[in-house]
Image (cartoon, rainbow, N blue to C red; front, side):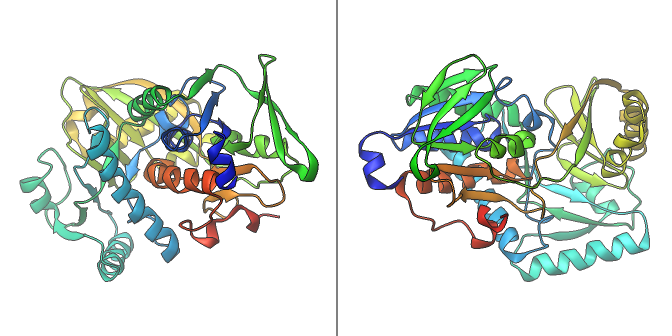
Length: 373
């Protein structure tokens, strides 16, 4: 876009109003762009609302640059909570993880050593210490090692998206919901010029940000770009209980759980995800999740499964983010990644600056879209 685009109020269409899209759009609007937020559904009610929503870098150590980007994402969340207020969406209560087999426990201890060596806040406790200090309702054995990462958090994604949408609109952004992008028109040099929506309207734009999550490959195809995406379905259940017996997010053996507001606990498991494509019925998957949760917190065994959903995670082909400009299509940008909850605020700030300022500094080079050709 460059400085000239800023002077004449660049018009930018952001496709997808989940965590990533709203963070990009809000930052663009704050910087003076004319922003149109476009979503096929309702903001924050897709993958964002059916994510484990764990803000962390402890599970992102496959590549040091990815770890550091997630550390920056954690810091950006803290800044965001200070900026807009934490009420209703920000829960910095830490995270617990433990395993029930010797190999898994050894892996956790090795992970703790790696994280500590990289300057990350991590503490190894015993099950007895965790029950005494943090989570009295757990059934974790006394001597089991438990990793406690006090700086981690969970986010109520839908509430945060709603708050940022309101702020973006107050800053001048336009919100278009219930409509899909049908075409992206280009001019000389394949430069993005228009966006056509399924409601028949056409937007004249200077740039498009593809933050369409699981549909990102389809949006990329509208500019004849191949964006490889993994198929990674995630099965999530919400259970209702008279009292929420846990205070923070945790990865227990065979199940992940966290509070999800008053009277609700959210459940997920990678083991259950692996059964999604086997033909297993949602009711059976929910039963397995619920049973595992009851083994971790006995009180959850009498709770009721209220809602379930299979959400498809937006994971680029190599597992890492695709963020920034695509040089072969001027004016087209991508914001596509798993861990969008952790990374949304930092990617939103960095990408908005790139779209309007034309500078690529700030985003690690190994997450640039051009690696997919």
